[in-house]
Image (cartoon, rainbow, N blue to C red; front, side, top):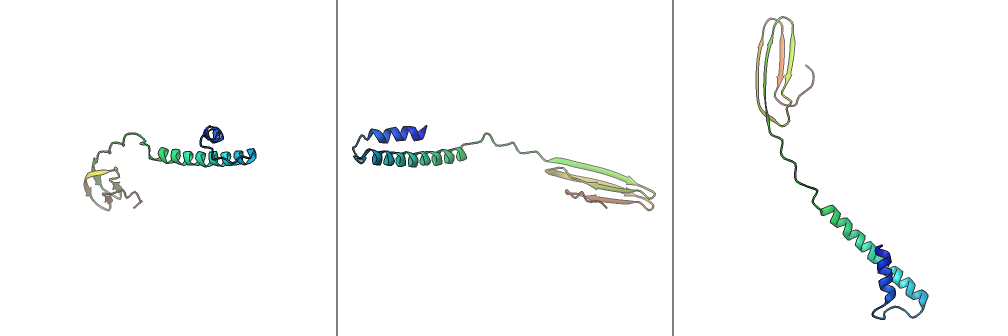
Length: 112
């Protein structure tokens, strides 16, 4: 649509700048219309890229993590405070006999 409008505007030649020969005048008007269409497309693309996309997302509140473990015999317990974003982490563990407890306060989810 922009090309057609610019082409028609150039063909109207309100200032008398187009060549007298009809084929040359059409070529110049088409070149002008193509350049204006490209400029309008670039301006529209720039505007679309800078337009606001909506309200910013609300920040996710921190979540506190509390874990308690009791192991006895030959048991194995692994605990990881993997909440995102992690708030305060509180871990308590009691081990007896040949048991093992592994605790980590971050996002460490690897095995023992």
